[in-house]
Length: 502
Image (cartoon, rainbow, N blue to C red; front, side):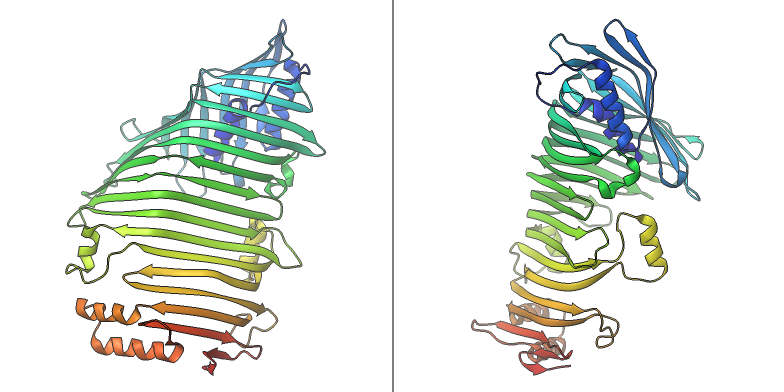
């Protein structure tokens, strides 16, 4: 979003840092480097430079970012930047404590938005040292924050009691090094953001809806390595980024109402991490959180409900550039130790028939895919979609781990398949697979008995399910256990435990 990119622009002067170097650097050289850095991201920098003794004064300074498809723009009004030598070969950079951000969004066939925010950098200090091709930065601030000042939607001004947003983090301390290379810059940065607090509210009498959300997140810390091209026209495909952010305990409270019905709740977690890797050829995410808790009360529910989870994790890796050969991809999901409150259980199991042990779901997939389109190019993606073409070919898929454990039953599986994309007739439009899947299931019969006792299914329905399992599975070594080996051979035949079923 434009607001987040403008926040990045604000942080360019407040969130890049490093260690002192021995070489001298001048205020003009520092300003030239900052301006070039911003322009490399596609920002439009407007400023007038004047000298005041050995100081360089840049005013009025504004940083603008047009939105895609001419849907609006965002402008960060820094106002005055003063760069002055410190006497030891470094340069200090001074900024106003409060800097306005103006955002205008005017999409076709949607509401227009005119928004003003204030960016706060309290007790901000930035020192730059080194030489123009190898600058290091050191910065600190008591806090950095952003606050909604004005909001106009479709020409109607929303009063302060109709919308509020305020977020701040601190104390802030960080360091970074920016080194020029052919066609771009190498950036290494670490930053400690302290504790984050946020508070937002909306109240729309016309739609009879309102809501509040507030919370904290402690111990924010991030480390980033990036290769940034000089020319923004090269696009995100040329940007290379590796970033890891970690956080400690956090909590939030929320309240939402609509048409007279209100839902309130709170969440908390013990900590987590977010890792992102981006290059011209691939993209990867890894998000994790530990000790997650939810609690909610709603007019649609007869009593409060709550749940907790020991671990949540999601990871994704995929190629993004067109390739003539198969590339690596991966997908993983973990929902570990899910525990529901008695109030939730009582909705569908008031008699306590089902075991209420913590549930776990785990999925770990790897794959080989051949991208047929540049996933970072929206126009190319739209063209493929318009023509009804698939954006990539699936060449191979490996199930490294499947685990579903809940209500006394446990399903596990692993397997691997290859896919022939030249044969889409054997399986009706799907590339012909070849490979094997091994499954193991325990507790299925006991689960069906409990479902009958609960009244969720009838005896005849359970009998039909048992007969179906008998077609695809064989008894395992343990009581109430089943195993199954599903194969697809090179002729497109499907076999279950050696018996052909297709």
